[in-house]
Image 1 (cartoon, rainbow, N blue to C red):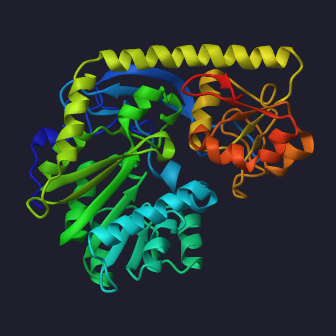
Image 2: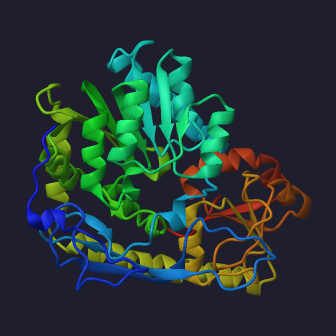
Length: 429
């Protein structure tokens, strides 16, 4: 893989809120200035900064603005928070979602079969969380190792028998892993690639780690689905990039990678799965050009789709706010379900607190007993819903709505009702 770059590209950066800012943020992909902000969500707390009730002081908050690059059409945040503030400890655990566990198992199966991986081949997962995906590879006889910066998650993965390096992925980490385990035949990044603030360093590190015959598979929230569903709550400080295929293709090609296949997936309300290999190593499928053509047809080179997205987000904010206010005025009790990162953005954008949402139920023991960032809404176990039987449950993790409704069937049979906030505020029949 050859890495060529201009002096402009080498100087690419986001504005850091903890350091003196340059004159303007630059595009993470092409390095140019002139980003166009199309939605300002105000100053919000870090999405996964769940504090304990006894902790004093305000939750730190940072500007949250999303912008597009008029030159390469990449969509990204207009500012950044140092990764250490967000990822050194992390409370999202992959294995707590049955839907996600099944999805990651199917991903491991697809890569193993498609690339004919065997007992001598190495699979590396970047941002490996609790090792759920790597466990699926291991069950198929593939050697594995993970890269996970969160100390608590790396410890959890190791307790499950998954070798895990607790670090951020860079060239130093890539050399260390290659020396210890050899080159990787498969490198995966599921929902972690949008976190990367220095894309060039990341891809240089990948160059060191990836076997010449290896494959790099990325899964990330897809910009087209975010726009189509008005999923503004997907925007938070961890996600610095909101990927479409065109900018990713340009970035990869600059680093000697070719995207040879793409898939659109329903998981997480719409994801893009990208298969890449070294240039010339694998024939390119028709799926790549079809999606590029669809993106051109959708008008991503224009500001119009992004302006419409911002208008619809404002309408959801108003309609959901009215619905919750009317229910509260009528004497109805409301709880929430699911405390994913997106919940922080939604409750912050609407200005919700415990006076409206009494508590939020979540299956993760790591979050139970803590507070939703900023809103300070208590997080409890799901059993509380059956004990209290609130009139309504606002499904904050709406990307898993079917799974959640099934889990709470007893609550529903007892007369409870569900509110889904996005893509439009509605009460489920």
